[in-house]
Image (cartoon, rainbow, N blue to C red; front, side, top):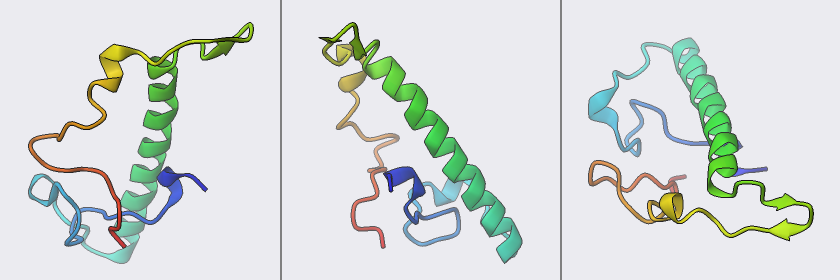
Length: 89
């Protein structure tokens, strides 16, 4: 199981880092829809970012190094908020 499929906070949860930017779901159906949407978004973003960070990572047996232009953002905060989900639940 990868991180995109683990349980994560959604708007309205106390641990969601961007609560002031999103309204919380009105009911459980809306919460489930939002969780499914965000899970799909996380999976798609991770798939696309891998292709950007490690372009042609194993073409012809040649190992390429990660792109320095994307790796520099690995430890930065977004809007001065830590967005990683270590020990959220």
